[in-house]
Length: 96
Image (cartoon, rainbow, N blue to C red; front, side, top):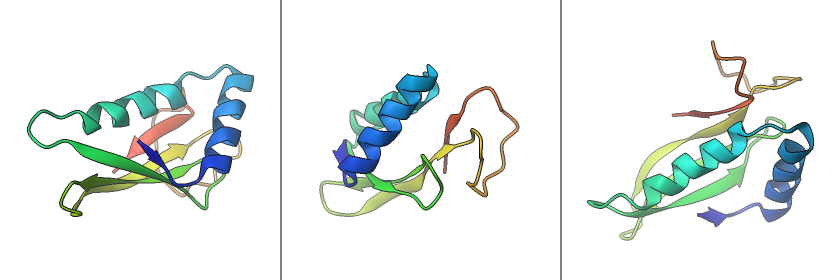
């Protein structure tokens, strides 16, 4: 995983630890697993999103092409993501 926004990443990880929420780490683990796909490995690039505690991600292949582009979205309080969710139990969720 290539963190393109290290300061924001550190702040969000610290916040998730403070509130005892494991959903951020679960989302990060899922994205890291995508990188290891046996047929077409990739690198996940993580960027700061405009919504608080959220990220944009890009799946980039060795040839420079893009795969899935989406968000690792915070649905806590306040939820300023603009994304719909029916699951209010997990504060962070992957949206594609």
